[in-house]
Length: 333
Image (tube, rainbow, N blue to C red):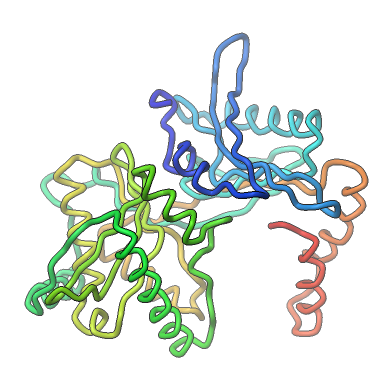
C-alpha cells in the first residue's frame, strides 16, 4: 500500500473502524493489463428497500503518482463495477483527495471542500506561526498548561464533555447548531476502534491535573488529520487550543512528517472566517479538494432521480427549503 501514496482515509484502520451492522468494509484494486494502477477502501452501506446498497468512500482512489487520466479511468471502472454488482449509488467524498482540478466525468457529479493543510516541506528550519497564534500558546504556557498524548478511554470521555461545551458556545455565538461528527458512522464506538488500531490518538492539555482542551487526531506515516476538538471556557481564555496545535506541529516537523491537515470548516455565518484565520495562523495553505457521486444507478431506485434533480433546482426559500429537506430524506449526500 505504501507505493500508492495511501492517505489516512484509505487505510484499513480507518474504514474498519467505521463498520457496523449496516456498513461493511470493502477493498478494491483498479487493474489494467495485469498492473494495479490504484487502490481504494470504503464501505458497503445497507440503505434499506427504498434506497438499496450504496458504495461509500471517504476519499478517492490512491495512485502511485497523481495522474488525472488514470484517476478518471478508475472512477469509470468503479461506475461499471457498481452496475455489475447491483450497487444503487456511489459516493466519493473529497476529504484528503489527491485532486488538483475538477474532472468532468460521465455519470458523476462533483462536490468540493476546502481544507487547510500545514505542509511541512514548505518550511526550512521551523514552522512559521503568526504572532497572535504564538502569543496565545505563550499565554497557555504561562498559565501552567502541560501538553500530553494518550489513547485512554478516560481522555476520550473528557473530550466528549469538552466538545459539548464547544458546541454550546458556538451555538450561542453564531446562532447555528452543528454536528462535530460530520464523517459517516463516526461515533464514540468508532473512535474507540480508531484508538485500538493505533491510527487514532488524543492530544490534550491540562493545568493542575485537569484537562481543559483535547483533540482527536488520526496519524500515520507522517500524515496527520485533526478530526475532533473540544475546550472549556478556561481553555479559550488562556489560548490552550493554540498551545496544543503548536505542540503537535512542532513535534511533527521535528519528526519530518508530511503534513498536518486541519480540515475544512463551516460557512462564514457560522464562524467559518474565524476558524479559517486560526488555521492560516498555523502556516497552513488552503487546498481545494473534489469528490464525486452518482444518482441512483439501478431500477427501481432510478425512479427517485427526478426528485433529487428537483431538490437541487429549487431556489433558496424557507418554504421550499422544507420541501427540499423532505426530498433529501430519500437522497444520501
